[in-house]
Image 1: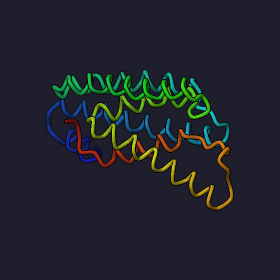
Image 2: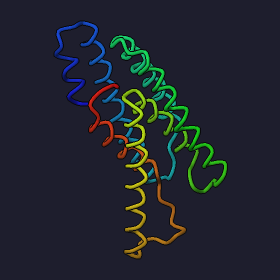
Image 3: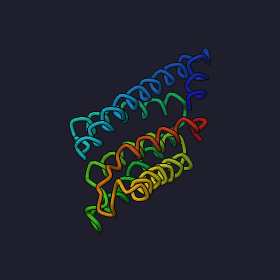
Image 4: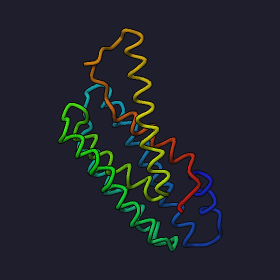
Length: 175
């Protein structure tokens, strides 16, 4: 995605450069919010609405016009669909097994679905898989090292954010 944004910014086309600028701002918003949410979740085991809700609005306000400027309305629709699907699946898990995920994780999944869905369904899948792999590896490490038990609460937000960041960085652009 970094190469894609760089290409847009240096394209010489006003529409593409503006889309690149909006996507760059989206990346900055992602970095700032991801850092803040990760530290809060690690410390307090919660993902506050005062960050999630504005971030969702900012994300929509940056990605939707970017898709239109790029002439890719399907990217906007895919982003919305991915946010609803990822958030909806997490909500089902939350309702079925409340200790497994918090509502903050559900809301975060919606925002992350917007970002990854803007790029591709492959990126959505990669983000989900990476997030669960990272969370699973750390949880297994805690169990093996004796620093945790099967009942140890491990905040999932940081793994969602890191897994998504990796998937986005490895992606090539919208398709």
